[in-house]
Image 1 (cartoon, helix red, strand yellow):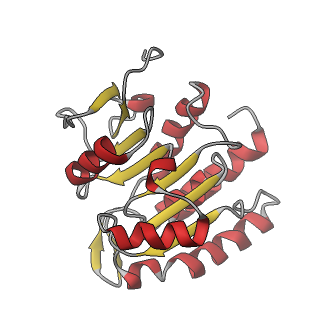
Image 2: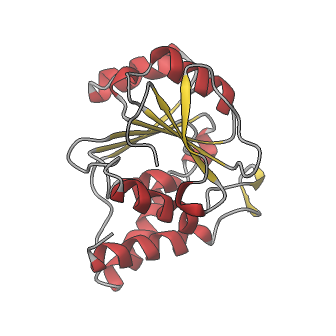
Length: 210
């Protein structure tokens, strides 16, 4: 991130949400959450590799919880979409984002971009994607970047391999030394940004792989 104000904004967002990270007891009890400080470094690397474009990239979090990853990604993609199966967890999105907005305003930093839409539903059911298409005119096969925090990663990997467009990317958070393999997807970067937590896969062959 070359823009210092954007970097400061992302840093504040990461610190804010990481106050509710692994070990946070929410409506559903103990819950694991993406460490946004680490994740932000991974996105920084993807930006430097030209894999994320704010004017083009379409992003989908397949299990978005309170939408924290969608908020961070809103600065780097054209559209940031999330799906969460639990309505109580999803209900945390608006009040938390409102509080974050107040903190950003006090710090004279950049508000989340108005490109975020979250849906309550099952990421493996056709009805969910029918709702997304009717709302945003956006189909599964339009998505450029998919994301999940381990949960159902194998089923999501199979769906991406079967239905996503060529060159679609799949970010999987939560693995370290032993990485999964997905039939039809290529492991592009096993340790994104050397954070030891995010692996990047892609559909098809890529000639840019480090």
